[in-house]
Length: 421
Ligand SMILES: Cc1cc2nc3c(=O)[nH]c(=O)nc-3n(C[C@H](O)[C@H](O)[C@H](O)COP(=O)(O)OP(=O)(O)OC[C@H]3O[C@@H](n4cnc5c(N)ncnc54)[C@H](O)[C@@H]3O)c2cc1C
Ligand SMILES: NC(=O)c1ccc[n+]([C@@H]2O[C@H](COP(=O)([O-])OP(=O)(O)OC[C@H]3O[C@@H](n4cnc5c(N)ncnc54)[C@H](OP(=O)(O)O)[C@@H]3O)[C@@H](O)[C@H]2O)c1
Image (cartoon, rainbow, N blue to C red; front, side, top):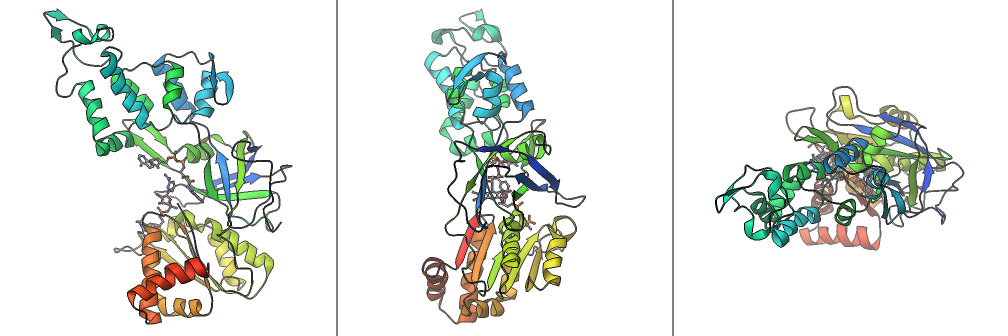
């Protein structure tokens, strides 16, 4: 089971399988919810190598689907045609469109309704007079443009106009509101077909595989950080992570998966080669897989893992397994960075700097360097730390150090490899 083979299963034709284990890795009192999730591969013939990712096809949370049906007054059993064929509105909302976060297109559609007709948008505002006439809120829905009430500075029309002309305002607005909030705020009514034109189609999410297929035949395992937030009195969060955390109770419901093989994020061919792995938070996922594979394959290459998260008490994922690798001599070094266990933040890049001389020795000896996890901040800071190690311990100028890390190690020798998101 050393390599992924071409498979009939894909994002368009996922294999529907069971989750057989699904548990929280965090200790009590943690601010996070990170789960270990195990899928069966059954008779799919699906195979993978360490470093690959698993695609997961998510579904929308039932409570949001119910709220949408209620706020729009749609008949859940009405048959509609979507890109996936004929199905009920309920099924279309649950499986075909991303209805958990609102699209910019949807907010823009509110403006079109206001601007083009001046009548379709029903707004929650007090009645105002025009030419001596009083219009109730529901009557305003039917007004022709020339009779539409003049908008006060915070009128819904102006509000929408502001949102579509100010990108930052739009982003801030959408950050805390979904379709249900917006539809309620503007009392806006859409036909299902109109809404489906505006909502994005459900897209699968990728997860770095946290297991070696050799060590866990017939299974594929993930380390998933669940995304949850609450605004305007309503709980919501990430589509795929909530689906896996809340809906897929083990063995009860099937979930669509497929393999996303990597060409680049791979172990060195020689088992004698040393590797350094930097994977804070969920970034540990592929390194659990790498370690399992290195143990399975044997060989004398040394393995050095940098891991960290908020606190050793609550985020020490896979502690027993890591300790058993250390006891067995499989993990040569294990360096932790617990960011919130002391007054000042300690991150993996601080630990890299502290161990700079030794890391440089490993590099000179041909070691591979791997990083996985947050792309926006952590990966950039670790990248800078590597350049500084080349300056401080390789005696290089800044431009030579940058060239060494970015061109020599990363592009030519392909031994600085990243899986960041
Ligand atoms: C190659 C690859 C490997 C990956 N591996 C892993 C892995 O091993 N483990 C893992 O956990 N993830 C991994 N990811 C990330 C994963 O694919 C998903 O992006 C992640 O799980 C979120 O998906 P979701 O559907 O739950 O969230 P989505 O529905 O996609 O929602 C996320 C969006 O929610 C919004 N959001 C987030 N927080 C808030 C907030 N507080 N308030 C308002 N809005 C907010 C943001 O717009 C954010 O982009 C990987 C990604 C890639 C590309
Ligand atoms: N698309 C999504 O919505 C989604 C879903 C899940 C995860 N993610 C992202 O995926 C990444 C991984 O999340 P995660 O929960 O596994 O871990 P994480 O949020 O990256 O946190 C792991 C550790 O990294 C620390 N950290 C914060 N900033 C850092 C920096 N600049 N350099 C180095 N370390 C830093 C954190 O410390 P502190 O927290 O104490 O600062 C924590 O100790 C994050 O970016 C997260 O936002 C995104």
